[in-house]
Image (cartoon, rainbow, N blue to C red):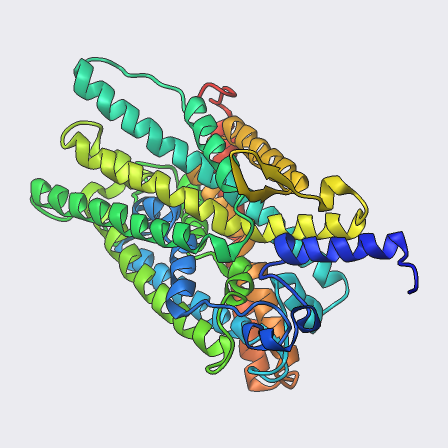
Length: 492
């Protein structure tokens, strides 16, 4: 029998580890499992996917109805009763339309039998190639890092709100109850270190569904408290044009309005992980793109209804004084227990949302490392946990993911600007990942003739969204500069 080259054996080991942990779902050649296992495999030789419209919807809702919903009252306050809801509806329509274009790019060619693109970058590589693939990768993964930072800030804000509410309740309203958000960011980071060891999307469905349920919980509480506040006020606050000149300067009005665009864009942003979510859907019939479009329609419709209710009710309750975080606007007094429940639900939701967003980045880095160092036992080996012998830990995965969580937590402690960070993240990721790449890939895949009516309309949509993203980024940067003037690191 011919000898096996040690390097070939190492390469095979690396491929197996990549298949099992780093490039979900698990990739196994049909020949390795024998003919009897054929029914357990999809058309690409990987274990059968089991996702449905409902699991895909839960992933989307977990990703979408995040901390962004809490800033929508503030965003509408900057734009007013006319422009605020109109902009929100516009973003929902654009997100649904471009997500439908992106869903068609999961397979190259036939939507039921064509070659699968497992990640957003794979889809870009299959349709556009060249430098655009690198640009897409940088933007996608930079945005994921930004989302992780934003969610850490939001989670600590909610934990801090719980602590302050209990402080006021126990010590009286005269107690200033001054607290730092830093310890709570550390607590959130520690929790993420453990949850980040879940290998892939297929194994976080339970966490995603729990997080989606939590999002409805705190959104409903915010909505209910907003209704009560409106009744207590004796009417609806706000104006047709939003926060008035005088309350803010004309320049502040401009910057805050553009920042509001970024906040709303962030509230709808999930396209950067759409392909990865679609890769969990079971094989045709119906095609994955058909199921994903249904999931997108359900998710965007549900989130838009919640956004309209929470955002508009937040503005109706507080008017120009609408807070950046809706729940903090109701104070830290009675009913303190209800606000505690809402903020606790936010924290649980953000734990799941953090994982949904970060899984593509985790998988990308680990796949690259396994290909780069196939002979390294640190990268490709497994260690059994003594207390749980059935659970095997890959040391590179444990080290890298822990380092990522620590890094994002430290950055969060340095830059705790919730609204401005949210707005900048929305601006950074909205145009390229939600609009430009889906439009360009669709044009190539469907061979849309240049200068045809469809082509011109798609390009006009892309250019319009580019202008919105640039304006939103400028507004958020202006807000961050203003925050830095009174900012003390690690003391916020």
